Image 1 (tube, rainbow, N blue to C red):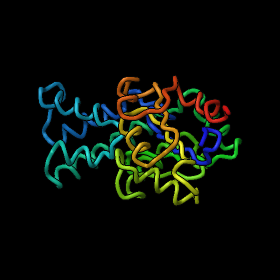
Image 2 (image 1 turned 90 degrees about the horizontal axis):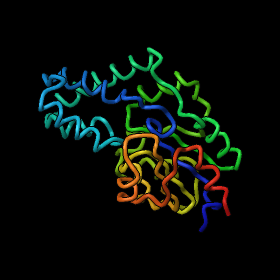
Image 3 (image 1 turned 90 degrees about the vertical axis):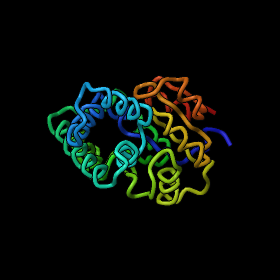
Image 4 (image 1 turned 60 degrees about the horizontal axis):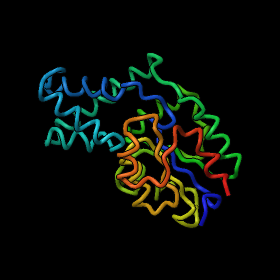
Length: 227
């Protein structure tokens, strides 16, 4: 099967189609402070290193790992969401150059496009509204819609099921993190494309299974159109 046979494209949001610009780290700092971890402390630095390494993972899963207690994890997650949504409301959210055009081109090629995130539905909807993207894709999914977030295959497989796609080999997954790549590989996608506009570098993307590494998502329609 060639890239031309791809009928479903599963795209990450922050770092892939949406500018991150450090918003995750700012919101994480607020969440950590709510649990008594001061910005600039050694404990904060260690936690931030884990956040960076696991970019793309469901945020509640990250907080469960960091705090080891469900109540603290839920509390941190609520503060994280409120802080991130506040930053979005301040106008700190914008599409990556060429992203909306790429999505339109992919759909114009006859492919279905699904936007996925590691954020909650509330945060995802806030981003979509800020960008005017409610109708930009065929479907949007968050971890709660799928069962588990990245690096598990659930988001990509839920996209396949919801869109009526016939085979995992007709799926392309694109994202900026190693966890996006693992999701694509584990879901059996024929194209697992890493983009260099977000959290992880080419070495990390390839180590986690990228079949292609692109400068940005703007290159994806051309890749899939090539025979």
